[in-house]
Image 1 (cartoon, rainbow, N blue to C red):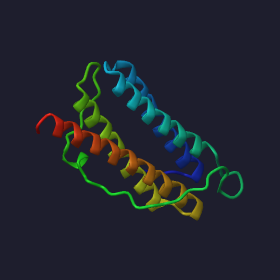
Image 2: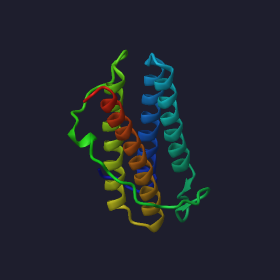
Image 3: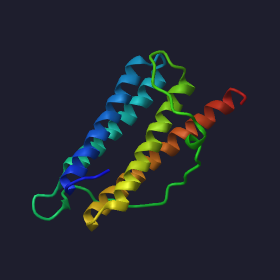
Length: 156
């Protein structure tokens, strides 16, 4: 990924967050079980928060984050999604498959933000991408845990 400036990086990240929120919203509308709908809408709301966070980054003079105080902590990676093949979301998908699609999306988002973190030139950019890495890692872990719990209930 080549970007001309920090604003382009932020714009790209905002678009990715928007796409992911739209995925969760669409999947929620297509889900048949209320619990699944609610879970997907929770993830959509989280992605919308990330989008807002990125919109609040001001790079007009010196990049600064205008609204957030954040506590960083290590998020365990159980790497369940690493074992999955990527598939497209289809209306009427089984719960297990919805979780698999979502896990792969979060895995890709985490990878993207780690790449952007590695390319970041300023402390501000590093902090934003570090925060987003942590948030996506939390989503990935939650989805992987939900997947494991579901498969355990199914006897697998």
